Length: 362
Image 1 (tube, one colour):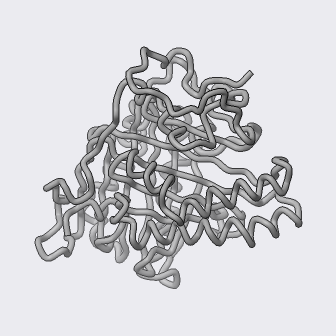
Image 2 (cartoon, rainbow, N blue to C red):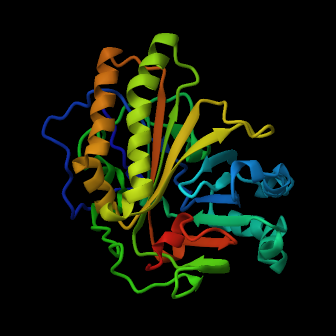
């Protein structure tokens, strides 16, 4: 029997209808993480370094952030972290630790007791010769959902799960993201459409330049997606199929959102490599898109109607059919829909198209 994506303790009277088709049977299995019922919220923090180009990267900088995560008291360390990197549309090389905590209180204690916050706030960061960025998301569990194609290999927040679900019903149809979000049972989750707000990033100037340290205010119902691919365990035939059919259209879709995303409500998007944590080589055959949309409806609209995503989704359905739905490719995503006070975005010495700096009016 198919499971409901929303766990029992988060279900409430539904005021917003679901989009699940009548008598729906998903075309392939998918699963979601089940977190402890006592878990009220979680934290994902992206803490990184920006260099003007890949050749300007010095491992000392990211190693400093790694030290704060690994040298903190055991009880305060993130539940899971990994190192990721991307060269962005400006040619800048960004490398970051992406870390997860099983609660905002734990993360706050880590900030203070590890020394990271004092180090981050120091004016010295503005004179280190490269950029720094910190993007922190603190959703309550009803504003967060996960999907996995494989139940045996947890990714991201699922490293904090109590268990993985059985096969679930709400996936592989338009609107299923919203149907998996507990908060969407009785809220429309509308955001401030891109360009309709008068918010300016603290530290931004009228001419579009930025000062050394830029803080971006939170947005109502900001929608964040982290969507990953792992082809490291694929057999040769499937690997060839993935690299020749799925990966190219995935890159095309991510580059559209990166370069032209504002027209569909996307503030920022990058396709990151998960890198080897000591050598920082991008040789693990794992990637993920990390994107910020003005609200869930904008992400839904791009997913359903834009040719770049139709190519991804349609291509995957054909890929799965060719393999008789027996895949060694592993896919996952996480969706966050955030209140303004559940967001923290700060950038030190980064170019003006970095991350949520894009949220300021041009």
